[in-house]
Length: 262
Image (cartoon, rainbow, N blue to C red; front, side, top):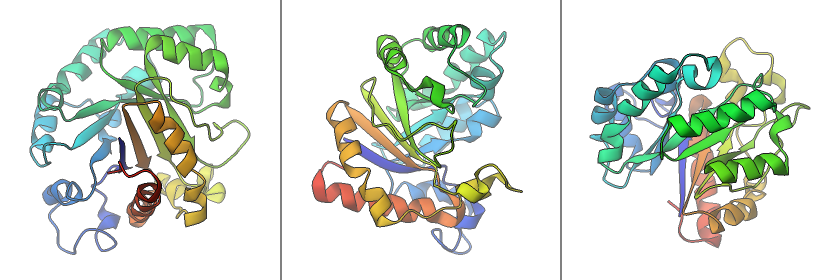
């Protein structure tokens, strides 16, 4: 099964391009969930989530909707004396787990997280502290792209996040790999001009993919889906609702070839 969604949904600049004018922010999730089967929750990276937040969020979505929750920064970026934070984070997920709306944890590590012994050990520690929860890992440095790392991820039951992003020297190249029962692809856009130099962080993701660019990914996503139980495809080019446009476009392209696409 392939699920197509977006990285976040409650953007002010989606009002007009996607949401109707005058929509109450509290209604955005239920509106979004009528069309898309999952979303990434990115706010959990900046602020430790709690179970009440997820209880109220899941109540606004249909029974088959899934949430992918980005790991809090204390777990991926700070990484010190954080055993308590792991427990707090896991406790927050319970309403999603209980209602079968939990997709997986998205552990997005910074570009400073390089392929060395202590960091490989940390991946194992991350796995242990998350118990048996499904986890996918996004690297931000190309050092991690080698067969030994793919084997490590497989051994630990960690999913590899495939990315589409500008091809600067140190960034992760587009790889179609599956290392666990969950496949994951994130489309960040290809805005070379604004990737490193921007006033506002959203400028990095100001990019609209062409149908030709997305078509290149169809056989790659098919390859991932063949090896997994579920494959999440997340559009992160969220500026002014471009993620919605490209999510619809990719869904159509995949449905033509594969069928089991939502």
